Image (cartoon, rainbow, N blue to C red; front, side):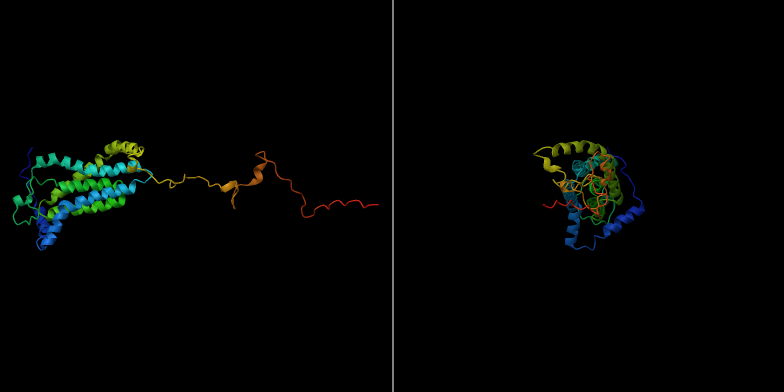
Length: 264
């Protein structure tokens, strides 16, 4: 359904569009090709690789099934954002910037379809936000890549700045609003896979011998002997019904041993 075909752009947005796109004018040919590749394929592939790295890092955590489910949601969230954008894009039906404004340096030729919202920006932000919920470090790196992705879409001349902002908003909404439902479905699935011989490697949990100690547990010395400085007092042995050893009252003055009789 087409609509809002005559969506006007404020002058400030056009100024930002021309300023960012103008940064590509002095670039040599190899730099233009590098920017184009990063904006089209490089950053999306890097985000997918970050999801794979996150899975390798969280699959050994104590909460491995839930963490693995979170990394799976990061990948699924990107696809969900792409699907959610399809009706929005057709409803708004906003032409590409080069179709309405002259003087833009379009580095990606042959782009078809409408402009609002940016698929690349929406997918990248959905992956980044969902990944941040599982692993803060990799999530922050993914957020940085998503911002670069949005900037690159304006730099190559295929999107307005508001297209990118709309993509960021859509990706964030999809990743956050659908996360509870997705994790409720994916966590039991990951837990079931972890309990099988064939798929246990997906979420194996901590390695044997590395389980965290129970809080408040008391370490007993080997052989049941008390350690030096042990606060347990043996003075309460009588209360527990144990027999105390007899101690002489005056050990410093022992009684003399009895003398034997002399032979007569």
